[in-house]
Image 1 (cartoon, rainbow, N blue to C red):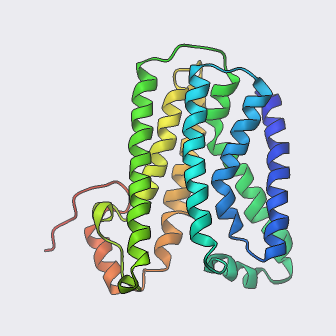
Image 2: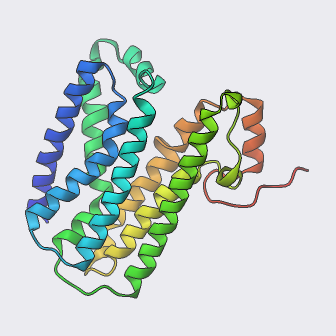
Length: 258
């Protein structure tokens, strides 16, 4: 496993350095968002070539990563390509001043590469482990992953359709799945990675890979997910009312007005 991690770190360094150069040339640091899902695919392919050991569990978990990563990459690419650079990255460009280049390299691209490897820990562990037959735990874990995938896909679709309607400009999305959770797509994302962790539980000492789903859960709940997404709407009265009635993360029936 240690040798695999060394190879993964080297490949991820090269991968993120390449996209750092592209982002610098095009003045679009939001390329980091596009290559997030792609990074998981590259890392998984690296592990597959390094081990050259294919079995049912490896095929299963690799397929789940590919399906998730390809869909996410295409969605974010199509969303961002029609716009100027994301306001978050524009703000950092001004805030970082003369240190912009080095901080972009370290705090955006290199940090993201490291986080990809941490979140992907269950997958890398499974690929690096020996063969063992699929079982009921795997079935339950895939069911959890599939539920998360449905939440993310439907949540994203509903949000994209809402934003495309000019009549909704400046309004808050609170329909469909968004009526039960302020971030159903993030809920789905977290659920998928816990599902993949469930698959790792069938591998000897697979429980040690809990750092993967734990990391993505922490990032979404406390760092770059919900906090950043809601920061831009906190000043709106409509959003304040939405917050009072709707669960931030876990889908729940909306609270009744008193």
